[in-house]
Image (cartoon, rainbow, N blue to C red; front, side, top):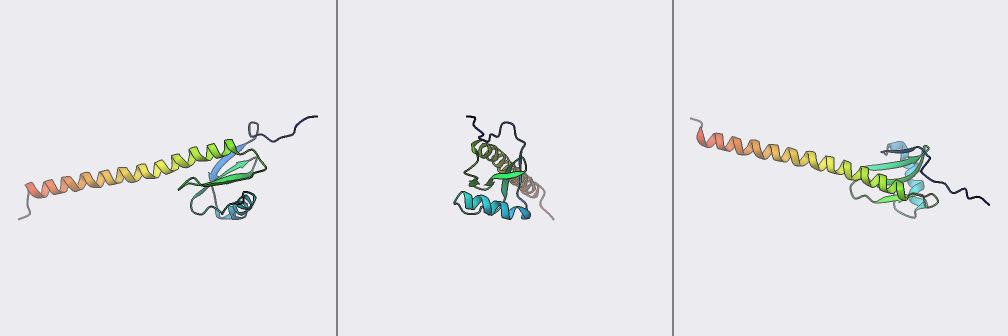
Length: 116
């Protein structure tokens, strides 16, 4: 007797942002997982074009098809969500640092060269 368990090792895996037209697929995953539908910015993991897992970027809450081996997919989603979250926080931190630097320079220039 041979086993026909599905694996993700020989399948095309796509990690992408969810779009409005993915709402039905996300609802189906949430129902299969007996979980709530993720809201906000969500990533979807597709295997051969079929959505198998989804993860909210903000807190990495996920839903997954319990009838498909999704451990690797969740790991991939987590890596991508962390990367996207870090990019957003990194850009914000850089902007704050620049504003702080320019503010300090402006104050120093105002103190040394007061307007007359």
